[in-house]
Length: 498
Image (cartoon, rainbow, N blue to C red; front, side, top):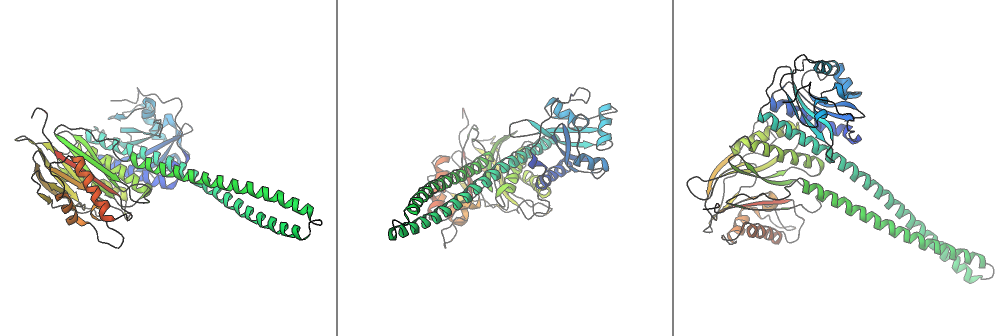
């Protein structure tokens, strides 16, 4: 455990980007600070950002946050070595202080920010290059033993804050490039209009020169010069238009990169389990609302497929928080329904009465002890039901149910347990599959999905099943604009040596 006495403040603190100090960023950090207090039970949670060797209190939740000292820490900042950031930035790693005691450094904190600091936990918040530019911390007036749950929660929230930093940096760059492209496009339009006007004037002068060659010889020569100038302006207009197209392509590439960062880079390999995943953003979608993840748990594996209400930066932040939270909870709770119920509590605080929600289905998997295959608990919260295909070709939909996460104060999660023999498979999808439809036509719906799976080879691989479902969605939509689409296929196989 790090102590205050052994920590040294870094000689040159990082500098946070200017966009992280605007109101919208504070709103996101405020929710993370509230989550730190509600999920760990400490008195105060806070987010600090460092700029020009001064630590600024960006967000805080708990008693003492409205004091003159706290307001001064927000507006003017405090030297890094006298702030709660000093321990973490000094060692460039998380700090877990259970008992600060009467150390001089602790009294320095009291003078500049809050009172009665006795226990402190802090995790670095980093910029896209990995440099620590701030700290997400939890503070208590009593001694506090930081449990594995506390550490997982605060590490997850710090990752969400780091994601907010990356998102803000990327948005600032994208907006700057978009503004520059718009200005160049406007200049291109103006140049083209001017070129057209000058060309028309040149034509008039040429006709007048035909009627009075001698009298207007000099004017005809001037018209020729103007015509050459208009050609150059037209060429410049084409060049600027091409440049605007290139910047638009770069913006699309940025959106695609951001989408990829919110999905697993690759699916992990688990013994006795074959998996396949597919994701495709809807037409015109800038940042996805659908997500999936697959990860190891203490007793087996966890798989989640979810749908975040909305698109754009807020949906991206919610997606990152939901994925990180499910991973952290899956490592501490074996009950799939409890994992989604806890995620509901995090999202309820995160949305803070905003009109938003998340639907999800979470499968907790473990090897069966009495036979080959998998024992699976499937929890659902307002999400399309999971589909089960037996190796003999039988296809059924699980019960599903539950209520979307983050809306009301109390969660409602449905749970069903199934056993997969070798060759059986479980298919998890988002509503981009069940609600696919052509222009003016009807949706595929759950019944259509069951019919599609019944037509697939039950002996085929997980990849064959995933490709078959996606192809059926495309065929049903008949080229119409699609919503986000995500699906995950889990097929039970034989364990090594089995």
